[in-house]
Amino acid sequence: MNWLEILCLANSRKIGGCCVAGVRLDTREWVRPVTNHPYGSVHPTERTLDSGRDVALLDVARIPIDGPVPKPMQPENLLLAAGTWRYVRTLNRHQAEAILQPLINPGPELLGSRSDRVDADNAQPVSLGLVEPEDLRWHVTRNHMGARQLRASFVCAGQPYDLVVTDPLWEAATSGLPPGFHPKTAAGTRESDRILFTLSLAEPIFGYCYKLVAAVVRLR
Image (cartoon, rainbow, N blue to C red; front, side, top):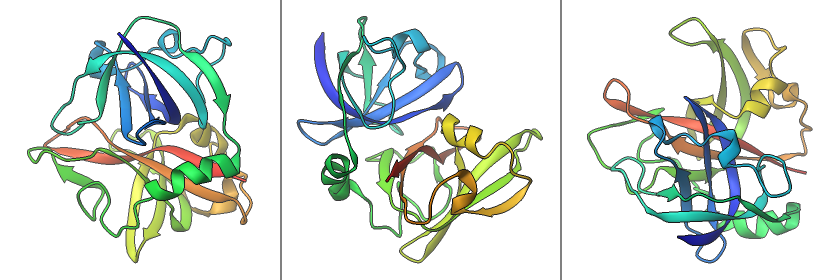
């Protein structure tokens, strides 16, 4: 077992638990801690910090890792070992920007394509990334099962995207919005707030891996 210090850049909704992702502070490489539970989901007790709260965006934490368990569509996966996550600190905006700015994907291609999905038969070199959306609008709609769904409609280097949001904090912040498109400020943000998205490829479904906005990183 090794202890790895990471900057948390996602703690998103996932079947059976959540998906945590971040970057190593020593190498600036993306990592996705996973478990042996179905879908690799991380349960609440497995991501609770020694301070007693859930790990949050821009927290730096030391986490116990058994080793890499890459998948063709998720090469960044690391198997969590037993142990309590250790809180180190929380970064302010200036500290975070110094680390995140070099990680931002300029586009127009994001995670292997210019659409909302990639072919599950084609292994991807990366399944996590950071983007700064332009012309951001929140899109409230229904999924194929009729359940409420939050999506982010934005542009990256001239390429339009419309991706599902699985960040529970922003799902809650937009829960009162009616179906349709809404401005960036409708979720309680200011126009001056800098917004970054942590993107993640989901598990394969019907032959595709869909891109998700796993976290909305608000810098203010």
